[in-house]
Image (cartoon, rainbow, N blue to C red; front, side, top):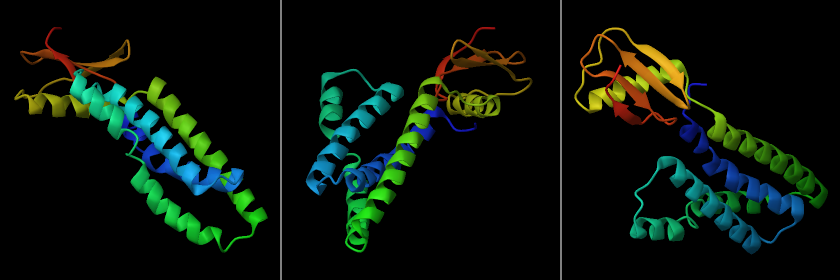
Length: 182
């Protein structure tokens, strides 16, 4: 797969609120309770996302993440709420239950697959080479000559034996860990 794990994780911004709307239909939850559920899932999603991005570890940033995490998915949920509320009044209860059941199951399956990929997945070799070039150019290096990619212990190491810096090591999400060596 050519997507970084964190890029695929961003798809959950739509899938989670959509799954909450389908859960509302499936389990006949009130809209206020659905909003609270979405806020809780938003907090979990946002804080897991921040763990992957490795934010600065100071008290102010942690407080901002703790407070703002509750709100991130609510605007999307609000848009979906309006759409689902308009459709809900036009559907019979058995049809809503069936659609809610299928939709909730699909959203749950997609969420589980994305979370598993985010934990165990990795970027492709070609994407690693592209990310390495980007990181090197951003720091003023000229990546030229042979490129020797090697996956080791959860990281891509791209060797450049024809250059002075030698190699670059990338994190799972395409950011530079270090430059040098060989």
